[in-house]
Length: 407
Ligand SMILES: Cc1cc2nc3c(=O)[nH]c(=O)nc-3n(C[C@H](O)[C@H](O)[C@H](O)COP(=O)(O)OP(=O)(O)OC[C@H]3O[C@@H](n4cnc5c(N)ncnc54)[C@H](O)[C@@H]3O)c2cc1C
Image (cartoon, rainbow, N blue to C red; front, top):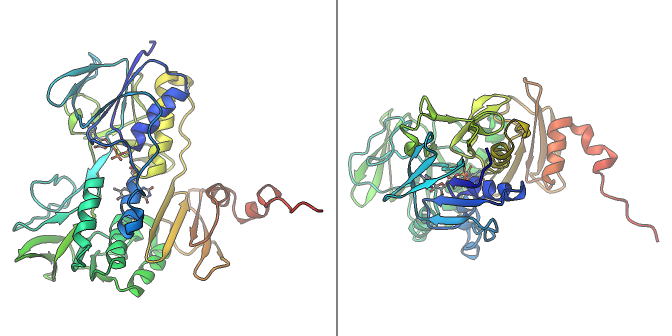
């Protein structure tokens, strides 16, 4: 059918990219974006990096103003969906009819405490009125930044990239920081080799890493107590949890679109010819099975595919997904192209010109490659070549810088 009205639910980077991509693919009809946050899209990755680290980086999360000329309903949530009638129901009443729909409602932080979304959080309990901070939105980031300004002692629960970035930011401003993780931080996401590099740097800068099983929050006067399954008790002024995210699919309950509670799209980002989904909310087919890949560039790449999939149907190109991930902390920066975690030692390792910089590559058992640059200056396209084709690709003439002109 001809699409004259497209609604995009979610105004994060996936929603923004879907709007831009619909326009660049020629859609000149009525475009409406519904966003629960009151802001234009902003960079979530900046919230745990530049924004947390420095007073001079208060605008690090800002993105350029949208140019897609959609009607933006900001501060408005979608409350329900009737896919047969092609209607999105809005919080507080009101309905939006559509010919095409992009679901880009992202995800939210899991929490340990009550009153929170417990699903998948390990069923942990909170005994008292401990204030548990999480980091997902700009408001969370401002609250966290204000809370650590007086240099409280901090317990960070969760040894993934977000927990490590928060721990790094808190150390940077002078807090005493304990990170709770049962495994070497980052090992589940990156593999032991890269996790070891980051954890050594973190411990060298004063991070205390403690394991002891499932964590429980408990009241402790003005501060917080964390009790681990093995009985270990940790006390601090502040607790920040970084225990993962869960997709915002509540508004789709009853729509018939969820499979075992999750939103699954095909290789063109679609669930039905008139509904596509992209970003942290969506499971999609990858080389490593159907999965959710809650990363910034994954959201962008998925949204581009989903927008064209919605407009062109089976004629649209399929998603050829290659993960790209970056993180920063403890004086290190990492860029990685390809699937992680990587197993074992790298098959290729090249030290960089500056101390502690490394360029690494793994041959994965599925035949793909993963390339990683630790404090190593390399453009992402070149890192992709290394992941795809191995170290010889770096020496091919196409990638050498042009020779200086002779005079
Ligand atoms: C602190 C932090 C640091 C990160 N750092 C990195 C990093 O270094 N590298 C990396 O690759 N990734 C990083 N990520 C992950 C990355 O930011 C996400 O993968 C990306 O933002 C996902 O974009 P999205 O548009 O799919 O979802 P979101 O950014 O979650 O946006 C979805 C939007 O939809 C809104 N919404 C939800 N439900 C509804 C509804 N019912 N109606 C209307 N609107 C709704 C939400 O309020 C939100 O504004 C980080 C994430 C965080 C939180």
